[in-house]
Image (cartoon, rainbow, N blue to C red; front, side, top):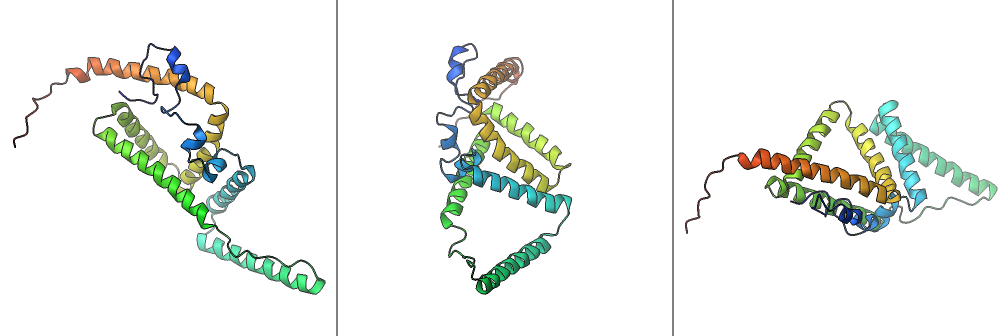
Length: 222
């Protein structure tokens, strides 16, 4: 039965040392897409990663703590930006300073395409695995998904949507980076937890699930 780890043997402890989390065979950088998005999540481009983290923290603070209205905030930021550029341009003409340079392309199309492609692949893979487990092909993952969704629903009653988005962003910005730095220790600990879960599930399956009576399978008539 497929589980969290690629190794299904509970007794073969030595084989689990080379097993990777979620049964992956590629480095975590390739699992995250292997492009600019993966570089940001793994803090290989520290300036962009730090800027995103600070930007999201400021947005969360303005909306959740200061309770700023979205339209009001966008208008105030736009007014401030326009005034700064106007004053800078006027001062540059009066005092012969370097005028502000406005690039032709501010947001590159390739960045959005890569981000959308990565999100699409990950969501499609997750939904496919989730629906496949609901068909009975991966019962441990099915029960884990049910429990996780229930826990998330309980958490959602105590946190606003913005708080959940911010916490999710913090997890994306920190967990992959921490896992890459302590990969061997995390894999070793997760291997022990995975073996205990498999052992408990097999015991539950042999004592309860296998004793549930099942009706005869009818052959399809042509």
